[in-house]
Image (cartoon, rainbow, N blue to C red; front, side, top):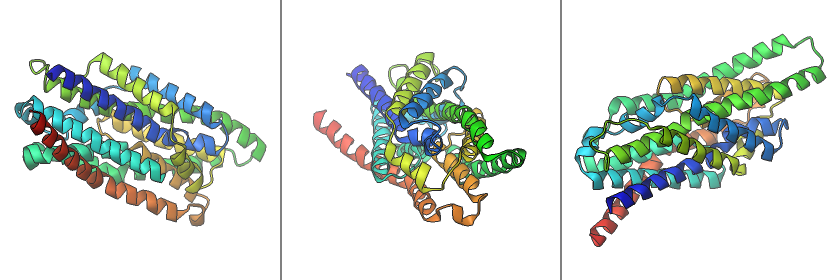
Length: 341
């Protein structure tokens, strides 16, 4: 019975990873589609490829943070296998519910913060505040603000440098060069997306396994977790959500290939650097900041601040909304367990 439950929750975690890729595909391809460098179908295939190969060089620092940096893993494991399974199941379902809602509304919200919020909400009924790792949560909360700012600064700087570098060239030459370079920058951003986002679910799977059937083993990330999570997120990206592509690539600001290159490179470098530090950040927040920074180099009015405001409200509500959903799922799941048991 325990093994069956573990397998089912690992499967749910991989479904979340798929939905994460589906939901966040827009982040990887919005700029390259909006500049018409690639068609949507080719763009998602390109992004999915780089999502997957990140498995072979992305590391597992973010996975360790998600596994032991939000919930006190030892305290959760001591609460018993049933507690571990209920908390993780509720965390995942809360995050999935919020992701699907924001996908339906066309809002680019953060899958990373949805999952973090779900974990916080599901832990409180079981362990209370003592079961949460305050320093880890504070770090994640801080980078809700810092990661888009860093992306904005890098995107703006790259746009200024790129524009200055080619200012003597004809517009046709500039467009041709940066259409080619944008294939590289899109690959960099998609690689960074795989590096950061696939690792979150590795950490979740490790909590499930080492908190239940493998209690006697030390917490670590196995190779098969890495491959399966990257495969799931890549598949989700391949079937990516066009609703959010429209918001990110068309409604926020109008980008030329040079702007797409600057935004993707700035966002991708930010995410890769923070992933190496073990900080789970939002690819959505980071690329939004980078796109906004690039757009603002053309003047304040070049950015549609009303759309940016809607995105910011989605950021604000992501952690509390997914936490509330996780609490509701936990309550319902607990009732079902009591009725069955």
